[in-house]
Image 1 (tube, one colour):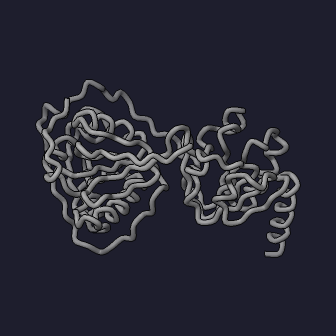
Image 2 (image 1 turned 45 degrees about the horizontal axis):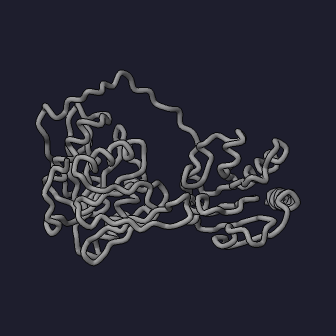
Image 3 (image 1 turned 90 degrees about the horizontal axis):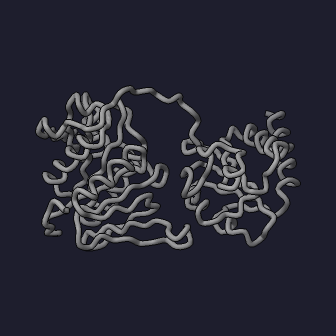
Amino acid sequence: MPELNINIQDWKGIAVYIDQTEGAVHPVSLELIGKAKELSAQENWPVYALMIGDGLESLACEISASYGIKVYLCEHPALRRFLPEPYCNVFAEFIHMVKPSSILAGATVIGRSLAPKIAARFGTGLTADCTALEIEENGGLVQIRPAFGGNIMARIITPAHRPQMATVRYKIFDTPEKINGVPSVTRFSIDESLLKSRVTSVSYVKKGKKPDISDAEVVVALGRAFKSQKELALAERFAELLSAELACTRPLIEAGLFDPTRQIGLSGRTVKPKLIVTLGVSGAVQFKAGMQNADVIFAVNSDPSAPIFDAAHYAVIGDVFEILPIFIKQTESRESHV
C-alpha cells in the first residue's frame, strides 16, 4: 500500500541517487546529475543528491561543490555496504523529508535492486532503462524508452503519483562540467531499528577489473556476418590497429562467439565512444539504442537499405570480408609511416 496521500503541488525538485561502493562513485550518477540540472532548470527547481554509506562526508562535500547541488547524507557503519532493507528505509526517510518530484537512479546492480523497492513502498511508478527524459510544464517527468522489442519509443508519465522514478543506463547522458562552488551537505539519520536487515553479508569479494566496452573511446562492433574464428581474427586485427574494444550484436552471443559483456544494445551494454565502426551490422532498433550517441558512426554493410545507415555518419556499402582486409592494409601502412 502507498505510504503517502499525494498532493502533487507539495513535490518539487529532482533527486539523484549517488551509486557508490567504498567511496567509488559510479559515473552514471554524475551523468544523471547533469541531466537533472538540465530538467530542473525548466521549472526553476533544485537538484538534490542522496548518498548512503559510511565515511562519505568528504566525498559528499566534493560532489556538492563540484556540481552545485545540495547533498543529503546518511552515514552509519551498518550502511557501509549495500543491503536492500536498510538502504530502502534510509531512502524512504529522505523522500519524506525532501518530497522530490522526480528521482533518478543509475541502472546498475544497486540501482536496479533499490529503485523497485522504493517505488513499491510509495505506490508510484518506475520506468527502467530510460534512453531519454523530458520535463513537462507542470513538472511531469516524461520517461522515454524502447518498448515492444524496440519497435516503438514509449513516452511514459506518472500523472497522479509522486515521486516519479526512472533508472537510466550508463553512457546515455553527458557528465556535466565541474564548477568551483561551496558545498551544501545535510546530514540525517534514521532509527537504529530500521538499519537491521534480514539479509546478512557473509563475505565481500572484489571482482577483477575487466575492460568495459562502455568506457571505450573506440569500438569495433560485429554483426551476424561473422561466423568463424578466421573471420573473427580479421576483426580482432582491425580492432588492435585502432586500439579499439571489440563488441558484437546478440546473434554472436547466442552463437557462443563472445562473452555477453561484449554485446551492445537493449539487452547488452550502452556505449558512447568517440568512434564506432560497425561491420556487417544491420542496425536493428535494439542495437542502435545502445550506440546511437557515439560521436562518429562508421558503418559497413552489403545491404544499401540496412537501418544502420540511418544512424551512420559515414557509410560503405559492400561485402565486409572484401572491405575489411583493405581497411587493415591501409591502417597497417599508415602505422608503418608514423
